[in-house]
Length: 375
Image 1 (cartoon, rainbow, N blue to C red):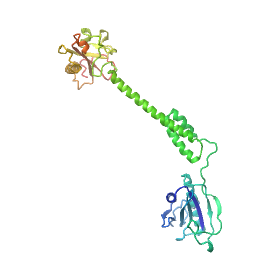
Image 2: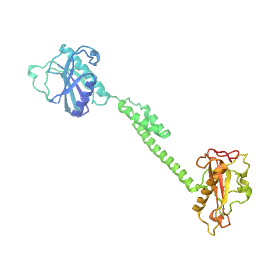
Image 3: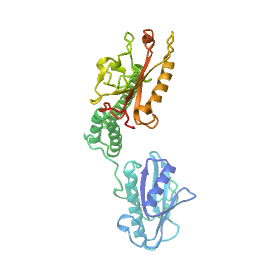
Image 4: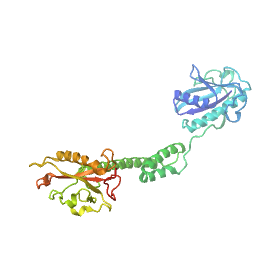
């Protein structure tokens, strides 16, 4: 009777599951028995066995796999079943069992589930004196096993060789952090399979890549937060205007009241200082940022009415004048406006005027007047 052994680095139950998977992949029907063994069978319909040289042959075979616990994990013994028969002679069935064990061992070895390599043993028929049960609980047999080459080989480390991907991982870990993490992870998988050196390099690439990725993310987040809140604190935009729509007037200066500056239809440059002065007036035919489309005074009062009151008066007055100048209502227009009005400092000097400044948000500078454009 033919017998073959595999030694798995798994407990018995897990070993049975792994064996069931590799045998099923080879086209066998596998059934657990009450004794804990696996009953393995291939039908007689001429289907391929998927077992090396016996693929495609019309061989009906049944054998058992006994799995027992040993010090290093579990021992799987492939041997011909005593239940049922075979369509061809026992020698051919034994060859199928041996080849099946060999192929199963190779697949389990690829998964790293075997211990040291174990040879296939061909065991002679049992003698009448040896029909008792062996120490492992299965029938014992007289005669010695004839050793054949191992049915699988454990991965052997390449002496002195360092895994190439581990070197790539440590380089990328500092130059391209995400790449270092990916390459290091793949390298560890290769090293486990091939036994090469370089585990330290791979781990360094992973750690460096992960740390630098986190640092880069935090730095980018801090930059965005600083940019957003910094802009908010400055209260300005690219035009040098306050976010509430006012052009900033320096505390020690009055808003210009020269008609040549604040006359409706006058065009102004980009107001780099946020202060309207005569030097800001440009020809509307030249590139300019703003065009004054309305101007009016707020009601006089001894005390400054406050910024909210100035804003309310400016929005109401500017939007009322908007359609008449542009040729379209504010809500239907693609243009926009800011206003310049008195501050608490200029109010004390008699400033009561609000001027409405038209601009095109789609471009930084406009050439030609926007009056009557219908935009």
